[in-house]
Length: 488
Ligand code: ZN
Picture 1 (cartoon, rainbow, N blue to C red):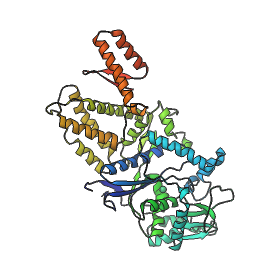
Picture 2: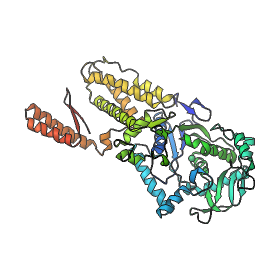
Picture 3: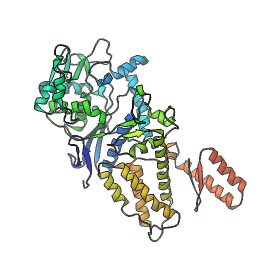
């Protein structure tokens, strides 16, 4: 594939030229949600970040197999090795089956992702559907000598692994320090060291989700599912592994160790991590009262929100920052994004209606190359957005009759805007999002054309009636030189 896409590899800590393992196929694995509650911004950011990677690689011509897993077992409270399973706990509190919790929140997650225009992944495997693969993976690590069995559970031996390989190379944590501070654990725990992590846990009598394995009836450790499912669907070596920065340690660090220990390989070529989201400068958390779900954003039903914000506003807000920068959400910042998005989409609509001239007198050259260049520099969406805004000045000059554009230049401009706004950034007009379609748009155009005719016939009563009633329904109507523009 001819391109020069550079992506920042968290493992090497530098931007690297993207060269996939197989000529035109890309394997990408992204850690998906643990489904025991409603989706929030912490779910939206990785989903949107890797949606952009998925869309851009597809635009470059790659056939992308995108795997995003669903964690429905083994993720214990506080991301730890002991405590209750997050899903089982929710099921106990709600008096339902764990899989009812999973299905309920998974349906809601999918609905939110669709509203955000996040494309579905190629495969969405569930951890609970891959218990056999996980048991086999544990066995491989045991056979290689990097794990030990204790009281029916199996733990990864970090100290032993670190003698041959480097535990901590992704997160940059110093394993010597970790081992030093945990040296006195002997005899007090099933684990030899607190830094060791569970590959298989023996289920306590009250634990509901359990499967038979050679070591005990139990369940897999949280980190194991991604090693097992990544290998199953993408092979022992694949191109991209992504997730939020909060997953770098211990989750991804453990995944690297599991694969190296069990398969003898560094399975992932490029590790990519999106940065975190803060709310009004604070970390998001249930105890801080600033935990806003996606549904609450869409309805405006939260004390910290001044109004509802559409899914496209949330998406645009996220894309206005580079994925490796932190984003701070506030109602004021979102209001700004809402205005910006509406300006961009109005300009895009205007561009589609421009009429061509014999020659071009407006400056528009190189928009496609500039946008590609920004994307090739580690998917810099904020720079792409600024190029799209810059070029709208030219669109407006032609629209206002001050400059001209040739048919060839106009169709190039229309094609670049469509490619970037719709296909790569995945932005949709809000009228489309609120359930409208072509017929609906044409019906509004028809009414407004009738109003124009009424005006020409000096039938002010009809013209005002159409305008006032549409305005009352929430339409914003603007008279222009050529006729009208409207939005909802
Ligand atoms: Zn994972």
